[in-house]
Image 1 (cartoon, rainbow, N blue to C red):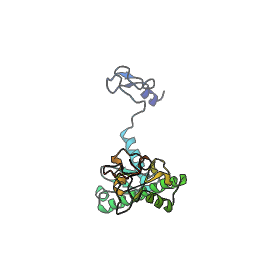
Image 2 (image 1 turned 180 degrees about the vertical axis):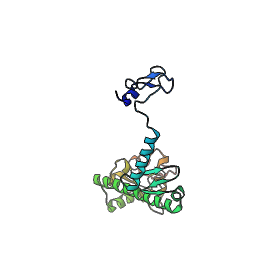
Image 3 (image 1 turned 90 degrees about the horizontal axis):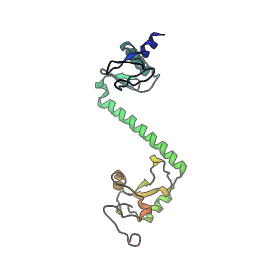
Image 4 (image 1 turned 120 degrees about the vertical axis):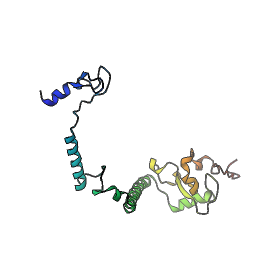
Length: 203
């Protein structure tokens, strides 16, 4: 029997100090505490793994970020925390995050348009149908209407005109505050807090 097998065959429970057998059960039969089968790493092993990870990050073998007490590694560059929190570097990070978000949105929109797309003529006809009014509040915004996808693009919705409804910027940006229904197919518009009753469409 090897030393490692001897180590895991009998081990003292960390809670009650009774001898347990992790090869049979990871739970102490005496007190019920969890005891891992894995052999704990020595400080030397932990330090070696840490140095190997830092080496791979700096050489570009792996991607990721690393934060230590004295320094951090971002995109393969080792820097101090003063450099990390500098306005110049934070501005660079913001640009990178914005680029990643834009790329993700473009990818989702490409998938949505593959399921169905609309033309500018169809959008203008939809706006004309509701007299340039927001379907929720019934107002005619000076800055124009925005396209709201009924089934959200992020949730797998399409970009077809049947999945779009015109909303003002305030209503479109405040959707998280409401339990939204499909205003366009529900009653036309005017179902918001500033109710606009259009005679002939809403009784």
